Length: 194
Image (spheres, rainbow, N blue to C red):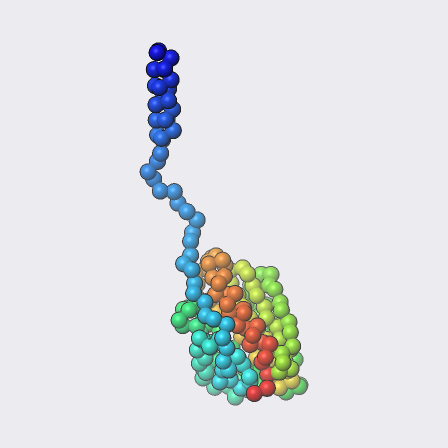
């Protein structure tokens, strides 16, 4: 009988020890970011000097610049990515000036990365233009940049994200992936083929 009482007391003590020691304090979790809604992969032609597809949910605004050789356009996704814009420049060139304009744009793209390693995708569009898309995965204000060129026109652009310094690139990854998808679609078909 005494052994049974000791076993019962031991069981109650073990049960109490297993249930005790809980803290009611919350445990902090890693930073979480709200899930971004992304626009579907549907495209329409933008009102630019060349055949230039943009996402059908994007807006395209022509900017005044006072320069006859270049036209500026701003692409935005106001319903999806506030604070993000793609600044594009369409520059008329001749065979003699094309190389200088492309060298200037290539230098600007490199400076925009701040020396960070970037990934390059190159292709030739169905419109006959040589195209480059640059993706920088480190925290920079311009994670995506592009250039398309032939002997008559150089088109360049940069995705600009208005975020605080030191942001985490994974916090905007869905935005960058969506714009990369859309810019690749643009570059595949850019050209005079209206």
